[in-house]
Amino acid sequence: MKKTLQLLVKEKEVTIAIFDGDNYFDEESWIDENNLLEKFFPIMDGMLKKNNMSIDNIDSFELVTNIPAGYTTARIAETIIKTLNFAHT
Image (tube, rainbow, N blue to C red; front, side, top):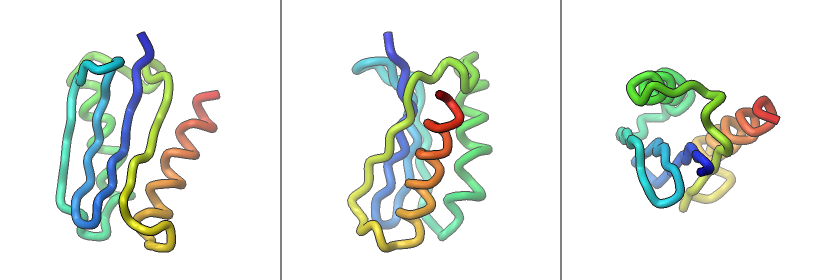
């Protein structure tokens, strides 16, 4: 089944979730303090290791956000997901 890593960015909260269909493997959340780029990769790496996975086990990367695209956090989140999808192809 297809494994997806989802980055969910709300106004003051960020969540990374790894799931396979409707089954969640893991989820980590933190309060956004304008440090998305600093926190995303170490947290993602820790989640993958904790679940005996690597980046190669992820089939797709998705962004879900409810903040306007003009906000810096939204632009950073979009760049992270686009970069991961590009590198994965």
